[in-house]
Image (cartoon, rainbow, N blue to C red; front, side, top):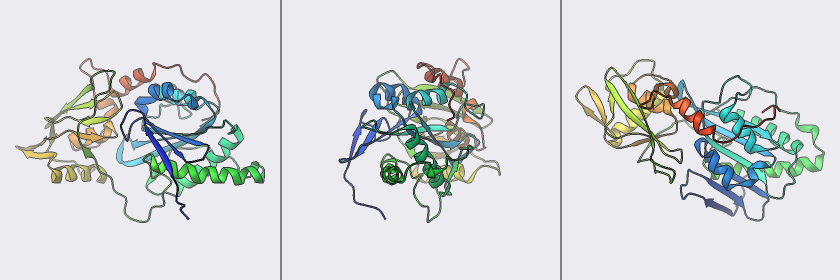
Length: 318
């Protein structure tokens, strides 16, 4: 049963979906949320990221933008592990391309041990698997939960209960029970330009469509006004993207013009693939479709941004 809680939320950059943290009053748990492209800023703002803890990576399937994806992990040094995922190769031999949002949970009193973190990870994996709205990327078997002493289990169960609340407050429903239909939508509005410079502008065009995709320094993504989307769609287009197009037609963000659809207002996305599919009317890997004027793909550009920090030299399992 849900409990009343007093929660303190701090927005480091003033963006409710950007770099932020949440704490339950009188609790030792600190939850931190940020976009993948804000990893460098998060490491600078929160020394707590170097402690043991658990983390959650969320985003959308690059080949099926309406499918939400999550990965749950733990580490004795979360910051290094996140950098490893961002710039290195994980256990699948591939970078975690779906990753857009990050949630990290640590203890402020530094009493969280490796055993505690593995127990929490196992319980969270089990909870996430019960949510049909999400696809979980974890392939390893969860650690046996009975390996902690009973007293520690009771303490960690309360930690997990509070953790789920904080992750929800920071913007993810990964641990929320689903009782109704699953749906997604995109919002309209320009990505705010961070202090580090103007947004990176990517281009993607083909028969019947041409567009620009901007990524701000705070990680926000948007299909730029003035882009032209293809008026027709392929039969295999995912239901999620089809709904995005329909919703934006209803809101006026997409306007029929000739044989295509003009983007009348910037449309924000959490995935380059969803933006590319909305523009082209077909399923496409936006990480390779969107390119800078110099030919660099979104995937290569993103990797270059992440490479600004050293990777985790450890080889422990994620």
